[in-house]
Amino acid sequence: MLKIEDTILEYISKEFLTEEDLEITYNTPLISSGIVDSFAMVSLKRFLENRYNISIPNEKATPEAFDSIQKIEALMQTLMKK
Image (cartoon, rainbow, N blue to C red; front, side, top):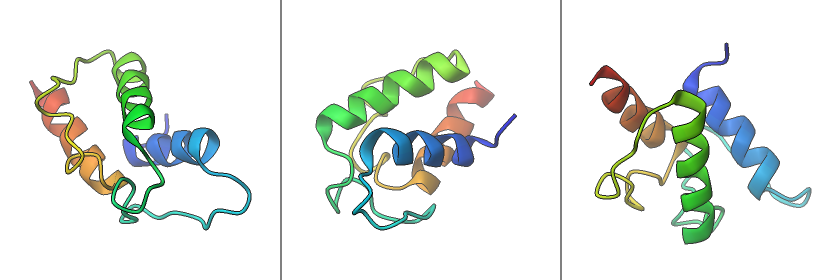
């Protein structure tokens, strides 16, 4: 099984990046750079909830929490410990 951050990177690369886009890293700003917009964030949230069988509360699904793969992974680790 892929690590959480690798799963997120793969999903974002497949769903939101075009061939012209630069490659992203775990620290690339996603929302503040425009790679992920509000609709994409909702799609990513649903993907993660389905993939890991968890619920991400709306108050935790903030632009700040979803602004990098590293931040999303940290949020996921916190939620999966509960």
